[in-house]
Length: 224
Length: 224
Image (cartoon, rainbow over the protein chains, first blue to last red):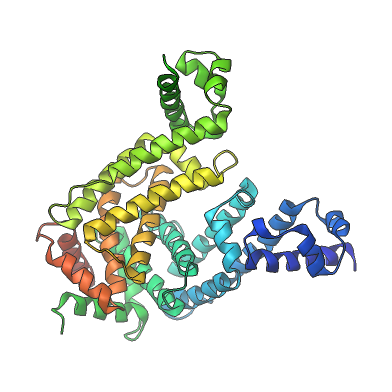
């Protein structure tokens, strides 16, 4: 194998191990064994576990950011739902590693790993603004989008802790949460209200936003 | 001064400095100067900056957790609004230190500091359940409450970054966000629906939840 090929292989093996267990618990010996090479050879390509972890995290970050890419066609609610589905696929595949990273810890809380996580958040933010067709977001919209991204993260983390609610339900719920947070901001700001009206106008009668409206109206009515 | 008194004084001085600037930028020399003692004397009480930082963070965590305590009287929405006001007071007082802590970084991302932050989140969670008069929360309620706590954190962090939206508006918005997230979960789950109906029933016609409902209905209507 060439140097780059060997590095790529090691990153792939490491990412799989770092995904399945907390990175603190994964040793260089294990990575070497899984890659079928000697421990000194691992160190030949990566000076230490941290650099290999950072390389694996970088690859995972790129993978996740790619899953946010969605054609700008059809209702926004349905697009967001497809992205949420791919996001939960990612979280599912990388569960323990994702938890360890997001909860922070001795091996994962470096400024470089934080920068990678922030890069993924920024990629998500840019994608959402593009789908909303907003170029210069007002402060209140930025707040809604960025705080919703953090809501999606924390919802995924809580889901991983026991998986007591079906993930499909949470995917729909997060799409509805986005609409709900935007609607709350819109209730107090005319610029946000105009944006929300424009999105609602593009939503089909059988889409997730319309379904939520109907269910919320029903909630206000006395129980059957 | 006695040992405990001196330690308390140093913690107070350090907390003030760590609140005003990123802890990475605060030196032991500065803390010593602000406390009016020599650098070696600081080391006599605390083995290093990290242990002093952790002691200051512990005090700040206790302060913040105390601000969540609210008498269990009157409508839940108004109680939550008072807590949000005290939460933003805290964030305002400790801005740069709060940001540095929550965004993670070399000096702040230890497992002990993470445990302190998680302790505050848990205190908030326990308080909210008590106000909702729920002893054994179903999984969906736990998810709503915990993910809303993370929404409040991220909203406060985003607010600190430029303060482009008045904090009073965000305090009201977060109370409404709580109602909105609970309503979304309630739209898909009968147990949550019963809980939300019970809370709504206790809300006054001029409270934040009622105001939100009216504004959301107006949002659905064509613009004036």
